[in-house]
Length: 110
Length: 175
Image (cartoon, rainbow over all chains, first blue to last red; front, side):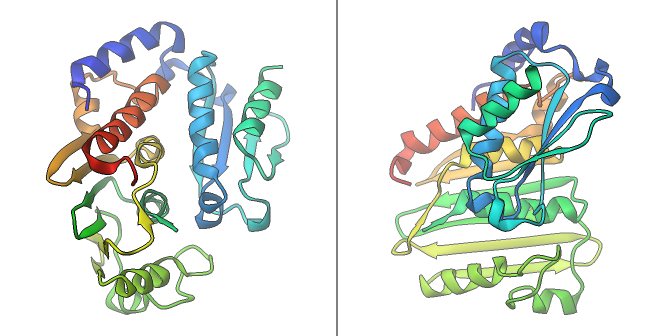
């Protein structure tokens, strides 16, 4: 591993544009949930998850959070991604790959 | 083909569901074996649940219940083993080891580490490649700075790159 000092230095540099999550208003946060049960994982959900994590960093998006969950109950449509925007209906995307994940982010930003 | 890193992602979700606050994961590759161990401090299983854990159709989360059953079949077929020990209220430990003839790779362990770090529990991930060892301890990262926010995405990317580089550079380029 890089030393802790290295990672912390990079983290500090990141914070200038990431914004401290502690201060974010959780109620206004957009929440992206990736289904990562056995079915999702084998269909490529981990790649989708990592693509979203990277893109949120690269685009310096604040107020957007990615987490995973288990099987979302429609295994044939995996990887499945849900987008929770406060006070709006949940939007569910199916058969998501890396390219589609980036499109989902585009829609959120639009 | 079985990707150990994907299996880890899956098993860690069970630990998360079991309320684990600490996951100790070890992954290793030697000339004769390739394997992993996951130890959590979650709610654990009672004896009855434990004895049924590797039977097809046993699931903690309403799924098909094939995960551990397949793992047991695969490891046994390769000349390896699957061992599960668990105690109600204490936690669970799963050890899986394959013979090197098996159709098994480590896979993208870095991406799995990102996912697991993001899960929020403390993670101690030890990677042993032909005797060389790399350790990721997210608790150390957190304690190094009280305001540390590991989910700041740059940190997660670094974790992924470092782990995959370590594996590549220590005989794991084709693993």
